[in-house]
Amino acid sequence: MIQLESVTKTYPKAARPSLDNVSVAIDKGDFVFFIGPSGSGKSTIVKLLLHEVAATKGRVIVNDKDVSTLRSWRIPHFRRTIGCVFQDFRLLPTRTAYENVAFALEVIGKTQAVARRVVPEVLELVGLGGKEHRYPHELSGGEQQRVAVARAFVNRPLILLADEPTGNLDPDTSIEIMRLLDRINRTGTTIVMVTHDSNIVNQMRRRVVEIEGGKIVRDQPRGVYG
Amino acid sequence: MRAKYVLSEVMVGLWRNVTMTVAMIITMAVSLTMLGASVVMYHQVGLMKKAFLSNVQVSIFLKTTVTPDQTQLLSTKIKGDSRIASVTFLDETASYNQFKLQMSGDPQLLQSITPDQVPQSFRIKLKDPSEVPQIKAGYNGLPGVDQVIDQGSVLKRVFAVLGALQGLALTLAIAQGIAALLLVANTIQVAAYSKRREVAVMKLVGASNWFIQSPFVLEAMFAGVIGALIAYGGLVSAKFFLIDGSLKALQSLLGPVHWSTINLMLPLLLVVAALVSGVTGWFTLRFYIKK
Image (cartoon, each protein chain N blue to C red):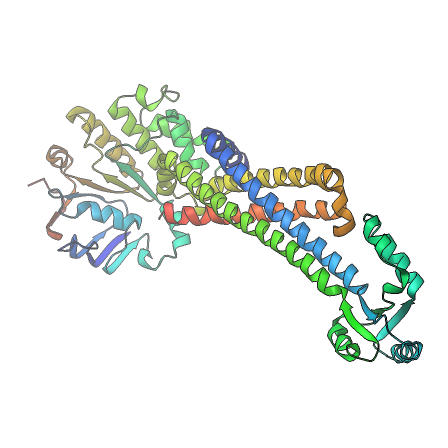
């Protein structure tokens, strides 16, 4: 599903590489935590998987496609197979929960009829039934992140990337979001989550890949934060 | 549905930034009016040149001391010249009559001149107007010939003035055009900035590039098209109030400007405006919205 083969990423003007000769393979349906201190290079992995940045060396394979060989006009289509959730939710403040999720469908050319069928379903799935017409500022942080998860999942991606999704949430809300991601994982969606929230990692007991100074220092099937 | 989305985005975009939109439309309209005017002028000058040059005459003025033999000799030579299409001889009376006509505003001068002081002349029309210099050289200095005058040289000065005016209009059109393009680029950047959240989400969920860019590009094109329509309106009122109005006297020199010429500017200006502003918008976005 996802494969990094001896990937090195050095940003322009950086003294040392953010990722240094990293190899890791993630199977379909896996749930993987990438952990490590700030600046360890874990967010670079998300950027590489989305092809927001290109690897300096090595191959990045997502959904059996080598992203470095993707033509730039193919990138939008490629991204439709990946859902994405961030620490800052990235919702549109002038649109309701429903409209935020529907927006993701509209802009890739789905009809309103499709949106009317699919959006309530996915909002129900994330536990926001009845709050479809609230604006982001009328929702709690946890609820906003649920909208973001709904938006990432509405297109039924093969992979869901989550970059510090609980970073702005209190512990209880964080656990609720993790339950939600777990439920999505059970539908067969591969989940890659970057975090430094040790509580969460310890509770979930999923595969843990620890990165430090751009290198993988640990890869454990049912790991804890350490 | 997508068309509806794109169109509503365009209208929202134009309205959100309405002062900028108006500035963009005005500069564009002025620039396009100048462009249209200089194209019309170019067209008119072309027509004029054709009309005048095909009519161009060379006048061979004879000395007042010319003898009838010399005149006869010249007449024979001219009639036998294959480069000459037609010739008219103005004898003393005819020349004096023409002189009277030209000088009718100056009776004092008229009184002081008698018919025998006005030179006789041959008025020659050429088959090929470009052969004027050869004709001039061939007849200058022949016995009885005072001077050979080419009317084309007078016309050339008129054309030079018109050409300068046209160059001025074109320069203004280009300067205004650059200002209009910078405004387009700036407007597009402001629009892209105010919609940066939407753009970020669109890129994230995999909206195609044309889908992200088309509302912005159409916004620019829309302003360009409105500018072109205003410019066309400007040309129409110029035709009404200037060419057919206060500057009507000029028509004898410039020739009539036909409505068909003015109307031809509409599609031209529309295409130029839409294309140029659209391409500018698209390029601005390429730099502004990176992958």
